[in-house]
Length: 234
Image (cartoon, rainbow, N blue to C red):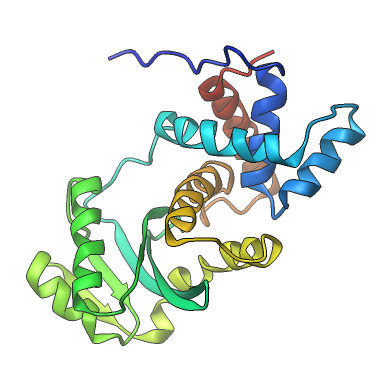
């Protein structure tokens, strides 16, 4: 089924400027005001509130159009959760990444228990379409209890030292959290991470690509894919 192109009707600025602003905001640890300043340096006068509206309107649409990594039966899921304080209340961002560091899914929840872990696994199975070869977690017992309910035949390795891949995946978001001075609500956090991680998945090469040439080629291909999806080709 053909997906219609992104519509930029009734927007004063051309698609190239809008998509570039959204890309800067989600790709790098920049505040809205810094993106505003970077555009101003290029002679583009636009307010940070306009950039916020662009990110909110177009970000989810871009994400829906970006091609996801195809799941494989030999994938390994690394699961972890991180505490994020919003309005003086602790919330938990549950995240799953694969063996290449590709973010598979994220979900903001108010609890750190078996029910929350089960919800993450259920979402993952539905989105991926098949179970992994193995899942790796820290020592939180909720993961084991949830796995026994959702996918009992999957091998489970529970060891803090084995889960560095999932723990390291939190670092980029922590940088953004500091730059943005926190999030206003669980809903805003969920919306942001869904776009932020998808853009990061596109542009950050997998750990297997280590040479300078491979990284350069990956980024060129990612930029071409971004321009094709956003309709900002020159």
